[in-house]
Length: 362
Image: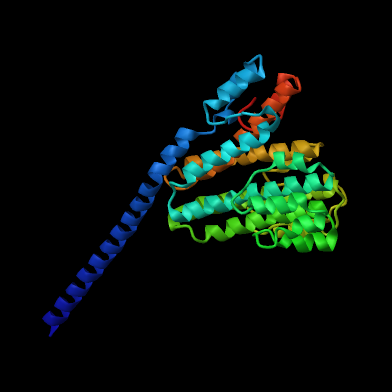
């Protein structure tokens, strides 16, 4: 009887050991498959790069004597400027084309995450049209300022541009992810509040897409989203204080990393921008308390974001880290190029142009 019990126990232990080993190997193989699925896309991402956030490449562009030299140089990186009057739109379209090329190679879950992030460019199209409508810009000029997005079709653009007023223009968003804007405008007639809800919608979609990511990609995505939330909330507070907006807290987003709910509440309820920024004490954003210009505050936040995503790319180099870095860096590269071209066109001093760029520019 004892021998039988010992045998059964030995067999049980052996089976458990085999199951543990199999489970370990399955986890290991799953991780290896996940790493393998990012190897190709990450290689493409590094090949495309975002060179115009780097000092050496920016210095080269700023060393040219004419804008035609700049245009010729950036064409090598995929930015083709055929009409200088629409340089900003053509740079954006070049950026999005390069992003889409990299995104198409991603695993399905990461592709959904990237597409959720890129929804911000549809939001930017909406902002551009609404600002132009609000400022009574001629229709033909508005058409030159925009392009078709993933969710904002040519038909929606036409409806918004041809609309007789702001309410009619915003009503075109009814069948899009941005339909909440209709109620915000109807309740407030406040364009800034519409813009803030657009940013909030993009962030909500990004958070939703994160839930579909496989385990290996969760940590970099969580770090990135928490960082974005903190930065977006500070920007919203800065814009709200400058515009003397009331009920600012309802436009803030939960889920940040450094800014707790009570700290955000204090910032939202502060009487002045200086008082709001004082609540950043004890965070990595405390340096903003010494910045007086709201534009420079946002610029410094963008520089912080780029620096942080570069760290995420290095830490999570075998999963989604490089993708996160690419999405952010490519956006700032395009913005830098627009700033440089505008500077050449308006004969702005080179050092002044440099002060407006994001990246390794010092």
